[in-house]
Image (cartoon, rainbow over all chains, first blue to last red):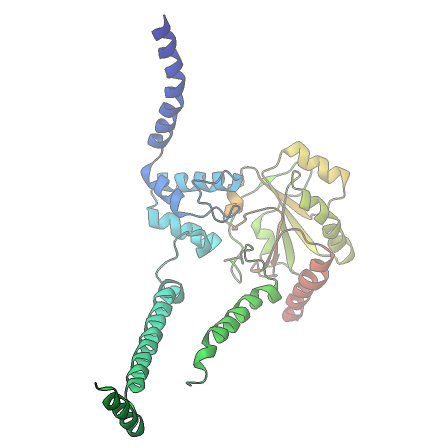
Length: 150
Length: 182
């Protein structure tokens, strides 16, 4: 009896998982990928997939409809960019306008490396200069050392 | 050059301050999107009729005598209610043609709002499922588009039009468009 009750109890936990699986499988894979790449314009740092805003649901419907009409993934993106601008893409395009966005960080890193390099080199050069003594100092030093020789 | 060296963090700091101050001083809301359709034809969208009101169709905007406003509104939208007064003033005091797009609304509720308050709209089109408005790039109600007499979009206002917006943004742009035509 106890086993049966346990078994029934476990079923309650299985049911939601089964539904979740079905939900994902029902969706067209392309649509699913697009949902992840497109921004919800209401909750602006969420993708269409994560957002529950009414507009996100509408946009999801548009994406599905367009895919069914035979649009490719790129076509759907272009369609939405024409209406909402590039902001709707969570990952900006590789374009001339976005050069600073994509390569800015690397550029600044290189500047940093360059500055550090020069700084370190200068420091080591200073050190060498510090080691060399003037003639007077060298004589003095020699005198002291000579006097101390046992 | 060598003397500036120790100050470099300070210099970088001030450059950053300038960079951030720009956003603070300009008070631009980065979450507000500029319309991609600026200076372009108002897109072909097909709207349904609201009983008892003239149907707004895109052809209304083409070859018009004057610039007009297209306002996207809904009965469930609270900012739209606040904006209503200013739309009324613009249509009655300034004789501006305002077209309404009723966005994802129930017919009865929309009619009730127009009965209860006055109707600022010359004609109204209904977008029941909100899919037509997506062609306009609408992402929240209310939104208002300024259309010139050739049917091109000249400005998009996101959020309600209040006194300040009306006096300092909407009316001046309309005035500018009218002067262009002369």
